[in-house]
Image (tube, rainbow, N blue to C red; front, side, top):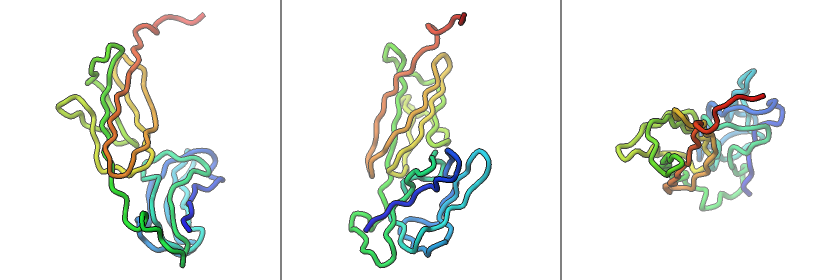
Amino acid sequence: MVKTMHVPNDIGGNGTVVSWMKREGARFQKGEPMFEVETAKTTIRVDAPEAGTLLRITAMEGTAVFSGSAVALYAAEGEPIPPELSEPASPATLVIRLLDEKNRLVTAASVSVDGQELERAPDGAFKIGGLAPTSHTVSVKAPGFLEKILVIRLAEGGTANHELNLISIEGLRGSLR
């Protein structure tokens, strides 16, 4: 039976997965270090709840997580491994195009995925490959536009094309009374 590994409830809010000590397909024993979560106050090592095999990491290094977040799938020792989880997941590609209110391409921008800054391709899009098929945090900053932060879920082995409409701050200027 496939089980879910979670971030402990006692981490005190949210954090970021900073490292995995095991890779997909690795066997582990109860109490072995599995991954680390960095919070505002400390870095917490999370140990295996029982012996088993790590099947799929769903929260890669750099992924924002919360108390109780699911981070991986595993099979307990002696349990059969489903065929669809016996091989590592195929990486995904993310393509992001930024558009203004008139659907014009915005190229003067900074885009990052899970904290990793992306380079702009010659066609004006921001692209990154080799991503785990899981949720990723995307941050967009462009002069003259509101900052945009969103979470995008990627499917295994595919390419996700996203057009993000940015909101100009031009019409938002003024004073509060």
